Amino acid sequence: MLFQFTKMQGLGNDFVLLDARQRALLPTPAQLRQLADRRYGVGCDQILLIDAPSLPGATVRYRVFNADGSPAQHCGNGVRCVARYLAHHDGLPAGSLRVEIGGRDYELQLTADGMVRVDMGEPDFAPAALPLRVAAPAARYPFAFEGASWPFGAVSMGNPHAVFDVPDVEAAPVGTLGPLLQADAMFPERVNVGFMQVLDEGHIRLRVFERGAGETPACGTGACAAVAVGRVWGRLGPQVSVRLTGGELRIDWPGPGHRLWMSGPAVSVFAGEIEL
Picture 1 (tube, rainbow, N blue to C red):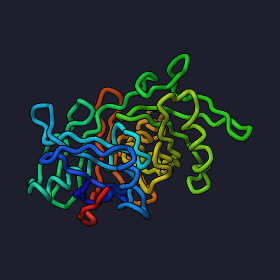
Picture 2 (picture 1 turned 120 degrees about the horizontal axis):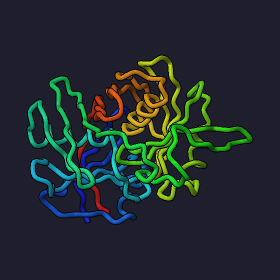
Picture 3 (picture 1 turned 30 degrees about the horizontal axis):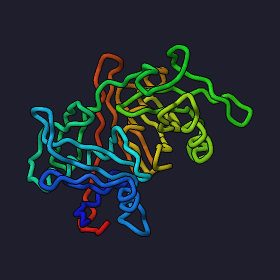
Picture 4 (picture 1 turned 90 degrees about the vertical axis):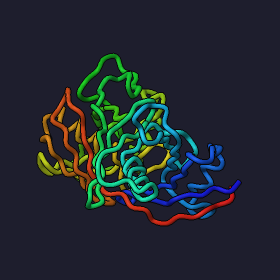
């Protein structure tokens, strides 16, 4: 089957976008894995699929699939790419649009300088939202790693995140602790694992080990989760610059009871077609 695609990236977190509005399609898990393969396919961290929305007022519905073919719930860098694709492909001007994600619609704002501002909703710290199997909600949850205690915070940004506070993000055990916690039985649907270094109340550095993809250059929902957890811990202010390997995101969150906004770039790389 021939698939037309657009390759996109947000801070180096790269995607293959498929537009199913005119031609119904849903790749199989094997086809998704081939698309994501960097030697035998196009190559990407995740696949984005857009089609007709079911909610009034939404421009498109969008779904996310991991490089291993499994479905994902949300992607902050991916939804910015969707907005930039619609701006280019559909000729949308700067301004607001709404995108349907998981039965809910989210506001996105296209700016004249090519940035995209996204309403990411209110962070949800309830363990059931991730889900997280614990006896009671807490600001920090214990986890043992290499004979030491590594407490983490947990929050849902439409997908599950665990966040560690580390003194040096470059030295953080992302490749060992990340997959270990991700596969732990306390997270029955797995979890994205962030490693946050707080520089001051308005700046952090962050690395994220994503479920189904491994460590990526940037994770939009991971940046939102880190700021949300850091705010609840009393370590961060309402406006935070998040420095990831691939670049920088701006997160604005006044605190509980308010919606969180993420701002950052998204870029089309090339378009093509592939036989799967």
